[in-house]
Amino acid sequence: MFCKNNYNIKSLNNKQNLIYNFLINRLPKYTRTFKIKSFKSKKKHKIQKALLTAKFIEYNTEVCNFIIVDIDNRNLKLYEIFELLKLHNIPFTWLLHTKKGYHIAWALEHPFILNPKYQTESDKKAERYAKYIQKKLILLLQGDPAAARLKGIWRNPINHNSIFYIKNTYELNELDIYIHEFDSPEIKINNKKKIKKGAEIFHNDPIFVKEIAAEILENPLKLQELSKGLRNSLIWYLGMLIAKPFQNLKKEEKITAWHTQILEQIKFYNSNLKNPLSQEELKEITKSIFNYYIQKKIYVSLGEYQNWSKRSKNEYMKLYRRKKGIHKQTRKEQKNTNFKKVKQALEEAKTIKKAIKKAGLSRRTFYKYYKEIKKKKESLYFKKIKEIISRTKNNCKFTKSIHLQIMEKIKKKKLHLIKIKSILFVLNYKNDNDLCIKRRQTCRE
Image (tube, rainbow, N blue to C red):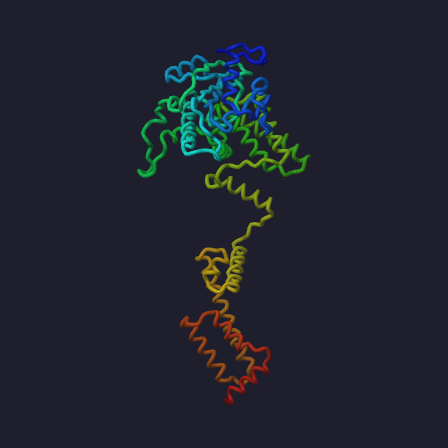
């Protein structure tokens, strides 16, 4: 059944009414719809009007009714798609023609819930299985791996040139076709860990744009190895990464940086592609980047910090310190700060275990600075004892005997630093007169 675009509900014939009713029964009453390719608004519209006016619809919002594949490649001809699907005995429910390629959809006979609030265990299993099947279909039809998702925005088949086979509805196991790369025996790693069937091979055809962007920033020659399906998303992502450091400038400086530096770099990456994007596609991408750039809403990153290269890590840390106003400490400054932390923790905490927790340092570093503090306190103690003895003209046996006893205990490591504080408090008199009175009393006794 062939459906021409731009028709009203009144002018629908019996066959077209069947298509209209088929979609209404499988789509929610309210959903996000768009007349132009700009998916910014979160407003929902009635599906009855949307099917007649909108060109883009959000599918599988709460319940998964369709599995859709985006073929972003004009080289794959229509008869080739028919032949492939006939071989595997899974003809489509509808096929839609776009400017870049095709959208192919398969309607599910028994849909399942996607909203995690209401999902059961069987729904979760069905979701995983459906994603696995979608990946297989993408690999078979040379589809866009970046569009490997169940919930998403695709084109409205009524307002585009499309072919329908309404009777073609499927169970999930009927769509589970055999592909050698997926259904080959499980791959072992180090004879211990195992990977799911075909997962490694599918991800080698790179889906994760962040990881690819990090590699391309270091080596732009890898742009030539890129597949066609990832061009739009990758150039958009690279443009966002390029514009990110300039977004906090003033308006005038921003605009000059945009025209002089950012646009030139985006064009450079596009020109180095094997099949560069057209000027119309590039304008759409730069418009969206420019909107994020002016509004200061660029929050993109290069994926996990562990997977970054040394160069990207150093550049990121420099920008982060500038923003936060953090001054990178030298080795001496870091030692002084750690020394102060340990000293403060020892004064406040009663035990060493509590002091380690309070300092927020590892056990090894804590004891490193603890030994230094201990040595300094011991040296200060000896100095104070010498000062006390030097202040007294006639050296008394009482002060000498205490001094010798403490010295012996410290050498044998029987005396702790906490005990030295109390002894120092007794010996460290405020005035020399008090010390002399105490000396006379002890000598008379």
